[in-house]
Amino acid sequence: MKCPKCDSTSYRKNGRHNGRQRYLCKSCGKQFLEPASAASGAVVEGSAMSAARLAYASTSDLESSAIATFEKTPENGQFSPSNQIQLGTSISPELPQILSVKQPIASTPSIAEHPGLAILLLDAENLKLDGKAEQFLGRLCSYPLRIKIAFANWRNSAIGSQDNELHKRGYQLVHVPSGASNADGKMISVGASIFLRYPTAKEIFVCSGDSLLLHLCNELQSQGLTLYRVLRKDENLVVENYATGESKHYSPIIGAEIPDFEGLMSQLQEWIDGEQYSLSKRLTDLDTISSLVQSRCQIILNDRGDSIKNNNGGSAKIEAVIPQIVPMQTAVVNKAKPPQSEKKNAKDRDLKAGINSPAELEKILLELLKLIESKANGQKILVATLGGSFSQVYGKSVTSQLKELGLSTKLTTFLKSCSAFNVTDSGTKSLVAIAESSQTKQQNVNDTNLNGNITSKAELEKILLELLKLMESKANGQKILVGELGGAFYQAYGKSVTSLVKELGFSSKLTTFLKSCAAFKVTESGAKSLVAIAKP
Image (cartoon, rainbow, N blue to C red; front, side, top):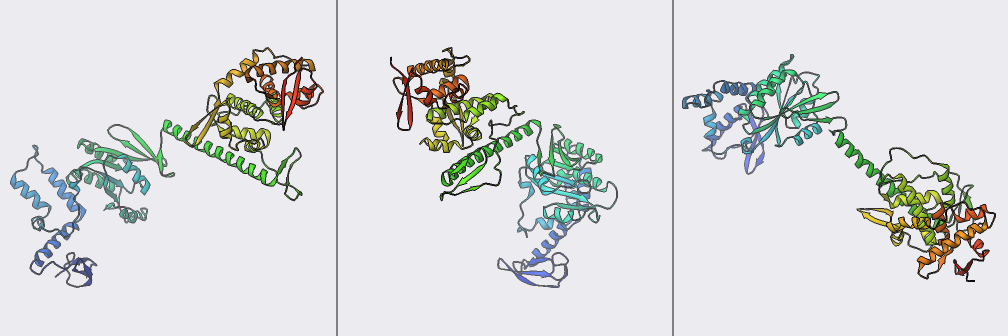
């Protein structure tokens, strides 16, 4: 028994495989199995030697045989029986012996069994492909990329360790002598006859930027193959479909495809929406944490600074400055930041009046929503955005305000209970808008002709009386809270009634002012104050 690779008789045992003895050649390091039986040992040994010689034949011999076969092809594409025998024996004289072996030594699936495949030809001296770029090329073709051949002078120090890397990734490495365009010439000679070795090939990538390979591209396209030309432009790779002219761009720096302008804008919009939702969620979480901290540690905010009053009655000054969180105004990024006017600042100061009832909170949230919608350019508003705006104006979370009023701590639940708002769920997000009935309410108030300058107590009393009459006509006999009357005044005039009372030189409390007027009757119901028109 001899080594099937080098015919050496110097070998040793090297374990067993499937019940058969395995040997290791001491001369070349080849591992081989013991013949199945002594009777068929000679046949198998001879067949293995022939297969080994054919497998380890040089690439130049196979290519020269393929080219010779291509040159001897008649014009009608038919071979005579004598020519067929001659061509078959010119490739390998031992081929009939190999075909006569009934049992192959190694069971490897044939390339011809696949309905179609893609081939990659790489000029490693001109272009370098990493694993991610190769996967990108594999996604562009319609057939699996099974055959990959790289051409270069692998002794060149400029190549580095590309041969080891490409070999691990399944490339067939073809060595060429040193010299200009030798790799291009070898790629042309192999690529022109590629259909002989791989007749099921449908697509092929020619990875080189040399203009000499244009001849190969024209030849492959004439053979009916779908051709892709891979070039390097600056730091990016450009993949051109030779038939349609369509181009794809790939960036090795980011390891991803470079989209076109429309795709880039769509991707940017997705990123922006994701960041907007993330920031809105963080604001909501911050409101919840702030509410918990205020209820647990009794945080007191004042104009001079932030002080913490603990459960033992002591207080400690917060030395660190707490930055003010600017809430998201819309669900998308505005192109330009709207300027803040003195009128808006004055309105924000008026909004900081006390909130004594759910109706007042509803009115304030409605005004905030109108302000946000005026800058949203028709975009939908997140519930978290409305809560963030309330926190910015009042210095406390809306959840804590709801808890003070004895309501549900969830802003979404409160908004759904109010007729002035329309809350819709979009996946994990909650959107809020002004209800149609609330949008007409402002017009109804304006129809009472109450607009004008208020310079005296009598004028203010008359306006509040008209507002109260309008509210009682719509209340169906229900009692009116003092806070609801103040909210209606704010909705009509854009400023709080307490600030107007203070401008007229009276007490800043609306309840005290109403008690001083003969046209109103104020009654106390627990912690709430009710107002009605006094009977004559």
